[in-house]
Length: 270
Ligand code: LIP
Image (cartoon, rainbow, N blue to C red; front, side, top):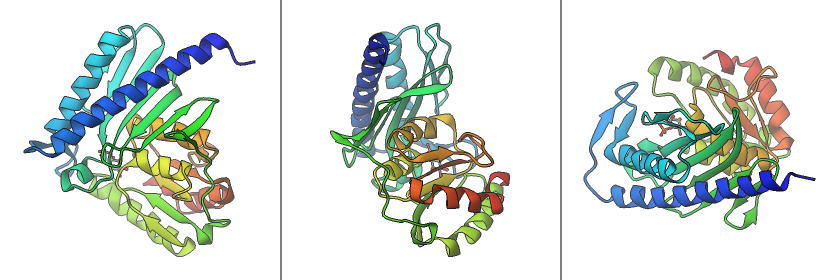
């Protein structure tokens, strides 16, 4: 019998995550309409806008007020220790390049973890309005619809996969070599541009699988929980968990073949 206190706390954490993602989404939506100030981060092609920063500030202020003892880690530099054992992972705009180009595939991603385990996650696309949510041990939803990661493909050669590429040119070259080995072995590929939404699309059966190297915890925490709670197989390679080396999520029908192929191609060595 699940611990009722834990259930209550998870429900509270989820409703806070969803409220934060929706309110931050409104800031992102309004910000898209204005003049954007853009700077470069890790490489000249890794952008951050004033809207990314303002949205993260909003999220941090809200958490300080509503969950003062929690720790926070955000993509745009927020780093706050805590005393409750709960840490929030924030990506104010996942898919910033899409945001900049006006491609409506970006999201606010909010996750809460306890002792390194993601307990709740919410990924909200402020343009489509779609909100993906999950609670550890209790399932995943798109709005009110419960999700099952049942992509159409029954084998890898029929699969439509998602993936993404680094802001670092050298790493992209390695990712390109891996992709050259993947393409002839699958039906097709999508580069949609936001890891959090790619993972949720696996959960919703819109992709049969997804893999990417070099993701940060804030890019993938919420999306991985949504995929896992929808029944997708979530892993790294060679028996390791998903992490910054590589993260893989796929329907049970194609996961085994996909992981084996990525291991053969050395996808965790780029
Ligand atoms: C992006 C990820 C995407 C990846 C990009 C970048 P950002 O996150 O969502 O999957 O390919 O390189 O990491 O920088 O938009 O938050």
